[in-house]
Length: 402
Image (tube, rainbow, N blue to C red; front, side):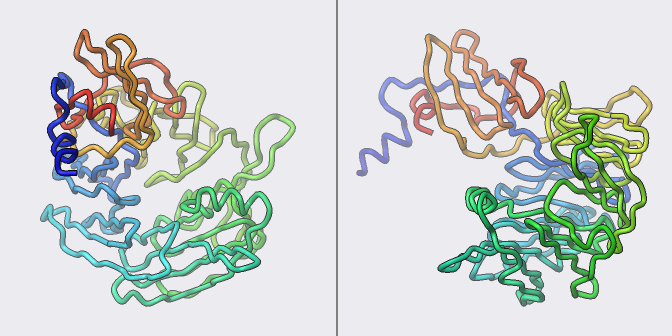
């Protein structure tokens, strides 16, 4: 056993370390502006980088390898985040340091969570498995005390194919949203919906067209506007409605074409995708025009300012309609372990498939460079040279066994 452990650390005899000439960095999976537009956070699987948009420079980086969606507080002074173990952290942007950490103890656990922007409440959804039925359970939990503020153990029963889908992917039991002003939480699973007032800490009755709200594609356009994608029409698009929230009054109807939709930080534009040649675009529902695109899924807009991941893995900024781009260099963070482990040698080409940027990596021995092919989900199948640091040095046995 001791010999095997030593071999795993040092590699087998004859192995040669391969140093990557261009460092490999994980792809950004989330980009969000602060509410005041002054800062931008860029999150990868290893942590969160905080950028000063006005000064166009990196401020600091938070190491958070298991963090869920990071976000700014409503006053833009803090970055708040949590992980699957319900560890909640708050970081001061001005001090560039952590100012609060709280570990919420919830013995039953959560499959899907969302943290409020003030870091006071966690929305927790889980599976409640009984002897004869399976239900989705929804809870609102106070971060400071760990007290359960609201609990519905049998929020909705899962039936037939819905049961199979949710058991296969329990981390996505339904739509879980928080309004841009941090006032309301909305959870929709199957054909049941819950609106919850995070300030008063009580359920809110949905009215009008929202009374029978079911799970689907939806996003907040504003603090009091919910964009909801409906059924297909004869033109090959889908009917979408902008509804007042929470009373459910129809404000506008429009056509929608896409597989998913998300909110931007500021403005009534939406993130939609995938597009024909891109993974995601910033879309204006008023004139049905795409105003910005990205080959990766990470992009956001604050009014006329757009931020996305550049081809070099840094943060690109542009103020529309000006053509000038600004690229802010991001620091190299630690890489997550590969999720799909398949390494093989063909001649002098090594292939890897990992969670890093959802890309297939190709190590070419002759040039001693690692290239990757973005997946179809990223809107491009052209090989591009990867950036970042795969711990800078790997032996062949490590590539094959990890």
